[in-house]
Image 1: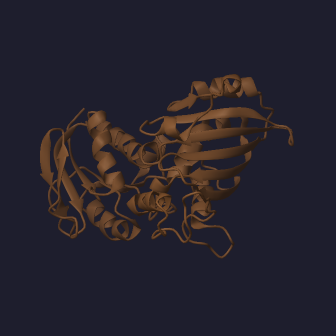
Image 2: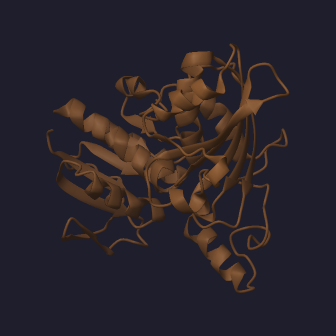
Length: 331
C-alpha cells in the first residue's frame, strides 16, 4: 500500500488522540503526519510511533501543503469551515462531526455496511454518529436476509460520548460535586437527554440515529424510532434494539448470520450469564451482540442487545477504516 500524507485535525481531543492510537495499531501507511488543532492547543507535543510531533494551529492555509487524507474530529463549526478548504486542495476529509452526515452529496459510511459509498465522495466523507455505527453493523446483514420493516432503538450511552467534560462530570459527581457539562447529575442517574431537544420532542441524538440508519441502509422510508439516554458509565455505549422484519425470521439463523458478519461478535449464553458488557467492549474495535431472542408481540420480530466502544469503533476506528480503504485506492 502506498504511504500517504495524513493530517489529524482536532489531534489533542479524546477522539483525536484515539485516531493516533488506532493508526499505529493498524500500521497505517503514513509518509508525512500533520497534527492540527485550535490556537489554544497549538504547540502541544504528541507522540506517534516513537516520534514527537508539534501540534500546529488549524488555519485557512493548513492544507496548502501536500496532504492526501485528513481525519477531522474538531466539532461541526470547524468542519463546516475547514473541510471544504481541505477538499478544494485535493484532500479527502473523513469527518467525525455531524456537520455533513445528512448532506445528500456526502457519503455516510460504515465500512462493514456500505463501503461502496466511499467511491462517490467529492472530497468529504462523513463518519456516522457513534450510536448509529454499532447499530447498523448488526442490522445490515439482517436487513440483507430478512428486509427490515421497523427499528426501535433504546440506548444507554457512556459519558465519554460527551467528551472530556462529560467524563469529568461523572468523576466529579461520584465525589458529590455538581455537574458542569450535563444539566443534571449523571452519577447515580440516567438522563434521557443527549444533544438538544427539537421541535418534535425528540433530541437531536435520537433524530441522528433515525436519519443515519436510513441513509446507511439506503432506505429513506425505513420506519425507525429512538430514545437515547446518558448513563453513569465511563466508556462504551449499550443499546436495546427491537427489529421487525418483512419476512419470517429464525433466531438460530440470526445468531449464525451475526456470527459471520464482519466486525461483529456474538456473546449470547444466558445460562452462563454471558452477554455483551460495556466493560468488556471498552478498548476494542468489535461490535458485540447478545440477548438475541424473538419478539413474541409481532410475527417477525427480534430483540438484540448491542455494545461497542463509542470512542474506538463509534468514532476513531471507523474513520481510520475508511481512511484505509482510501489509502488502498490511492496505491
